[in-house]
Length: 444
Image (cartoon, rainbow, N blue to C red):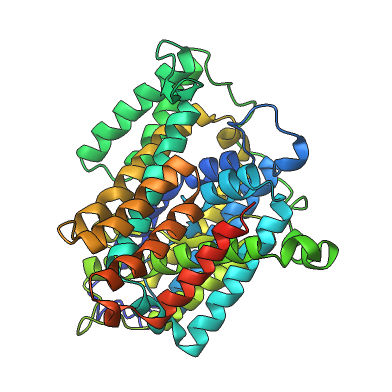
């Protein structure tokens, strides 16, 4: 095993890899609660049951997708990078595709499946480099920051801190209500731990918030700690079945935009995570990422597996950097993380009582981490600032990640051409310009 993972060459040990894998798991274990709550739209009252995904099935699908993705990454690409259903992408899946567009979750899963299959093709054919190079860096950063603002907005909504106001669209909620105060407490505690640099601060903050909620009667006590694994039957294979059962809902222009959004966000989120974590671990060579194709292939396979199981897009997690900081250097750490996700399947009763008010601080903090990309955008160049700003601001204001991307990608060619920089625009950007113009024309 030492030879397979090149542990001597990378100057690491079994102990460091296990601790690194455990640290990564603790840093991202919040997804086991947040993802089922998000995809089942628990924070949205008075919805027909048909619009909600089964909580238990999504929990199992989340854990299995994370385990499969992390283990494949560890064994194939041999990087200490773990995977799980992505934050931001799950919000787009639930709040934009299902809630705003009214698309059934079964059809949305098919969209995730298609994006994963396209990702595999792009990876195997080598087209990924062409696409990555075609999208200007500033727009990549803008998408990440915009998603950060969007999920932060969702977190504030889930907490009751921001509520509907007919006069001014949104306003401040009742900060004296018990559940909202619980979220505020959780946010303060989580921020303190993150500032202190405590590995797994998001997860520990969520646990402490849940305990305080139980003490004050705001969170139900779990009936038991360990149980059998919830059935994945309500969601398993639905993404494939839906292609043949409702082809009229699957093969539409709106679905094309949704698939492209899933693909785009996953594609560049993964690339950014791989480069960032590999740099931190000292694994980059001549400014290039060894085995990048295998890493992207592992990511795309995890997305396909997750869609079949019944969850939104599975992607590489930047929280893997916490494991690297703890000493992880090889794929063994990712395998350890994957195994821990498998073990978590048996703790469903303990995790299922956690409410959206408990997870809201985690969502808000992840948003804070994502908007750090703002600092990488050159705001002094107006032709760049306009499409970047529109990308970022349109996501929370329109409650749609896709709309934000569309606005930015439409204005980018316009501002660049007017500035006399048309030669810098890649042909793929013109293609995306047409796609997103059609998106707005046929959106309704």
